[in-house]
Length: 108
Image (cartoon, rainbow, N blue to C red; front, side):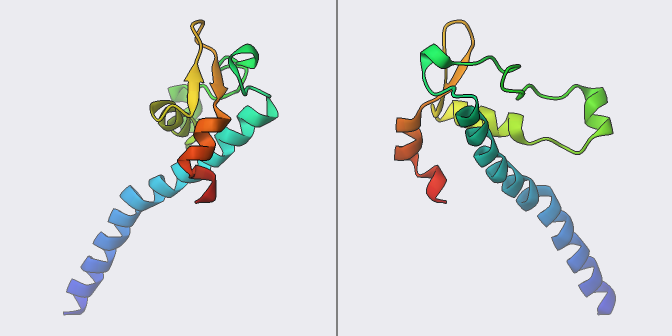
């Protein structure tokens, strides 16, 4: 009986670690990415910045092995998918404040 409860608790903790924690980390990173765009003043097509200028490029495999996981590239991709971060023709990025306001992301 006690072994069954212990195994069930371990399974629940593993599922929590696999699904809930990464989702929370991406949500937190979305706010950090928005802050980066604002600090860099990348708020329209004229002031758009490259992914390197914003320091949002995904880490290499070697860097990933040496440091903790960075969820900002995933957060950036999520913002691009919902058109809050827009791309110019020359692959520069900028934050659309209008779409951000209408999305309600900052109120969450």
